[in-house]
Length: 123
Ligand SMILES: [Zn+2]
Ligand SMILES: [Zn+2]
Image (cartoon, rainbow, N blue to C red; front, side, top):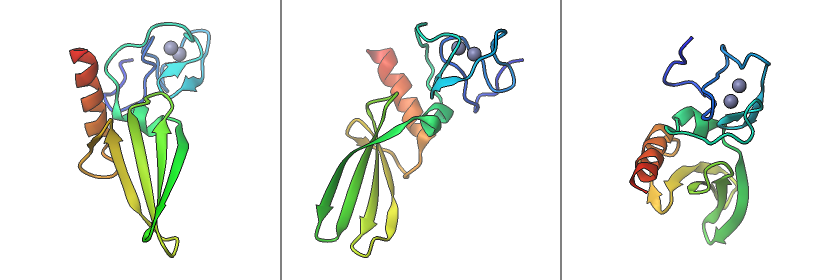
């Protein structure tokens, strides 16, 4: 059963939610299943992979108006999510970056995935 384009698949073997590996498997990370821990990952990266990525808090930057929390996607280190809270602690909204390039809207994972794929191909 071929995986729809918008679901999370293992980037090594292509298995997915409704079509797991024969021996059974679970997610090891956003884009790799437990049946192929050492196999090479392939393109493309999908928006669903970014949505499932482990976001690690790396730093908190405060200024007069509030604070920014910088999270880096463990599986995709060039993907950075910045969440902002104002002085009263209210959540203002996310900003998503690939490297230093900001995506159009906060949770534009499709756009970010496209950019990652382009850059990998160019490299
Ligand atoms: Zn699998
Ligand atoms: Zn796999």
